[in-house]
Image (spheres, one colour):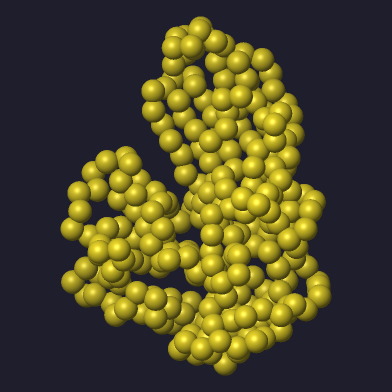
Length: 271
């Protein structure tokens, strides 16, 4: 792969225009015409990032950190970019030759962003191709993976729904993975729900003695701010037995490069 300097203008289908900006793009060996058919794009991208297809395993087998992974296409999403398109490829897989029969046994996720602004597809950003994610050895299901505009018109990120259940408590969060330079990186977690009702009897938590909680959060992206905009959390439900209806603002911290919860966020509900 080689690098070029290229002026890119990105917009999702709901945005008319915005200023051009310069970005460094790594050219792949995949012709941009391959993106005309999803099947061709997937086949070429999987081979480029993970090697040839393994007919025995029925997947693309990659090697990372001394381990073998069986990787398959997971979800493809596209963002209009004026004269070009960005392709957000989520690739899911699992470790091979390992016992994955536990809730804490993670699968693997590869996250890649490609652009067809040049004759050969440009690699805009990527993670290491094997981020540990999911449970029982599998990556999070396709329906749990999505992209959102989280700031300026060209700032998109993946959100990946995951959760935890244990000792009567159920908690769900969105993992945020965004583009920083040429890397897809961890930008923090967004709470989605919390319930300790599995420990409750007559509205009281049998372990803590407090009234029970069952709260859901609806995120609103790119509410305000710059490149990484604020995220609003609209909360509703019961918090320690009392009705809760409130909105909390998650700000992006440029020092930690992650979203954080505000100080007034209810105690015990954070991921």
